Structure formats: C-alpha cells, structure tokens
Image 1: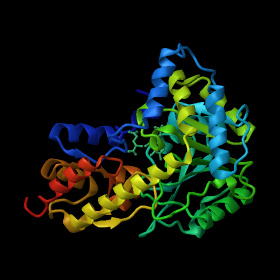
Image 2: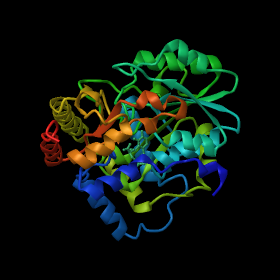
Image 3: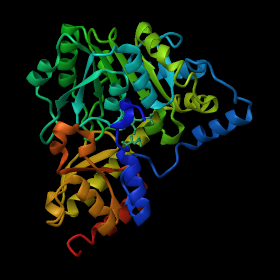
Length: 388
Ligand code: PMP
Ligand code: GLN
C-alpha cells in the first residue's frame, strides 16, 4: 500500500452500515434515501438503456445534460453558463471535487476547509499533495469566526472549499457569511470550490445562496452539485462542476484521465430530472421539511439536545443527555445506539482531523432522508431509552 493512502481509515459510512446490518438496526446513518426518485426520471433511465444509449458518452458529458445543468443554473440562480465550455459532467459530486482539486492545485498549495468537514475533501487534498487548513464552525449555529478565517488565508492559499447546505451540521451559509468568504477570496486571489449537493433541501424558509453569484466570484468559483440528493438517486453518481471555462478545463484535464466519461443512460435521465417543473422542487422541499420536523421531535423526545438544521439531509445532536454513563465519546455512542437501542447514526469525530477530534466528541448525525415508517421505527426503538 502506498504511503499516500496507508493512513486513511475506512470511511465511517461503510463501518456504520456494516454494524447496523449486523444488528438489524434502523439505519439513520448514511445519507441515502430509502425511497425511490421521481417515476419519470427512473423511466427516462430505462428508456435510455433500451434506446441503445449504452456506449461511451462524450468525456465532458452529453450535450442534453450539459444544457439542462446550465438551464437549471439560470432558472434557480440567474447564472449564465455556456453548456459547451462552462459545464463538466462527472461521476458524482465526489469525482467533481477530486478532479477539481487535482486540476486546480499544485503540491504544497494550501486549501481552506471548514470543520467539521465532509469526509472526502481532506483525503482528496492529501492525494493531490495539497495541504488542508482548517477553520472550525462552532456553537449552536455552527458559525465561523471571521478573524480566524482571515488568518487562515496566506501566500500559499490556493482555494477554499465551501459546502452549503453543510454536511454534517445542516448549516446553510448566510449571504453575509458568504460575503466575508468572497471578500477574502478576492483580496488574496483565491479560488472557491463549492459543494452544493443539498441546494434544494433547505428548511424554515432558509435561502440557499450560490457563492458564484456574489460580486466578483463568478470568475473564481467552481460550483459542484449532483443528481443524487435532489432526485433520490444517490446510487447513480451523476454530478457536475460548473464555472469559468478555464477552471472547468482544468478540472477536465484531470477528469479525462480518472473516469473519462460517466454513465450515458443515467446522464440522459439527468436531463429529464433537471428539467422537471418547479412543482417537483417545491414538493421536495415540503416533504423534507416534514421529515426534518419529525426527526427533530423524535430526537428531542429521546432526550437529546438537537441542533435543528437549516438544510441538508442531516440533524446533529449532542448525545450527552440521553446516553448511559459508560458511553464516553461519539464512537462509543454510535456503537451503543446500534447495539442496545437498535438505531444507527454517524458519529461526528470522523468529520474532524486528528488534532480537533475532541471537538466532535459529543456530536452525532442522523439522516432524515427516510420513509415515514423508518422514522417511526426509530421512534419505537428510542422508546427503549432509559430502560436498558
Ligand atoms: N458532498 C456532500 C457534502 C455529500 O454529503 C455527498 C454525499 N452524500 C457528496 C458530496 C457525494 O455526492 P455524489 O454521490 O454525487 O458523489
Ligand atoms: N454523503 C453521504 C453521507 O454523508 C455518504 C456518501 C458515502 O457513503 N461516501 O451520508
């Protein structure tokens, strides 16, 4: 095994899925819906497979899906993108971010990430020989300290990664917060890589703001999103990167030699999905609001301190109020919850780097992207709390 990867652990999602399966726990761990996406989108994939759309798609993505991605950006954010030069289709947001890091940073460059941090970014940076620079999100609403952020920028800073709505906290970065980030990017000539896979899942009237639409940012922001979360097809792994042609070209320099091109029939269905009428997106929003509200209620009733999210698939809790004394940290909590209570969640410390692991010690993340029955099954399991 190379030194490059030898220090990576197993992703926490695989570990928790295995343990949850072993114990038959209600799985509120990994952010994957346990229901299907819109029937017309599924039908479009079937039709594409049966219409001989089964050979390599163009490396940059099929024209119909690039056009649909650009039209979606125009419809929701008034962004103007040329589908032929400003959009690249990738194997999920995951590949888009890795290709972006490979295509836009050099060894020794620093990249700022907010912590807790989605678990792929830092291994991506390490594989690219770039150095992560961490800025913590703290307190009830997971704020960053503007001075601390400003101090993280220096001569070696090449980019900042902004994930909003944020996994695992559910934070939605406000326009004011994004303005602070934008000003620093402009001042220090730094690129922004945004991960907006939860762009359509926001709560309580929260507004998802696209960093690329702030003054001066269109020229230096690569926006990444994907089909999986919005259309409940996380297994399809269709994502995209969009932004100025020069940045997209840099990402494609890497992409062409990582995956080259991504699943053709699923791209065809992606065009159908992205072009769905507004009613689909409104419905999605209200369904998720109901799921989130129920999840918050279940977790509160179970005795946890809950941090109601403004967006994303997730609800973070502080577990201390409802765990037995022998449970000392988030990893022990997740194991105890699976084994003794029968519910799986994701401990928070894997979203922190070694020096900051303690910051995640009392947090755990629950996924709300589940059928009503699944949430109710979890509520029933939680009824055991206090009786074990
Ligand atoms: N970014 C974030 C913040 C995520 O939560 C996830 C997956 N849950 C991804 C990226 C992965 O997206 P994809 O499946 O499109 O690669
Ligand atoms: N993004 C998903 C989550 O946070 C998991 C994706 C994965 O398993 N890598 O739950």
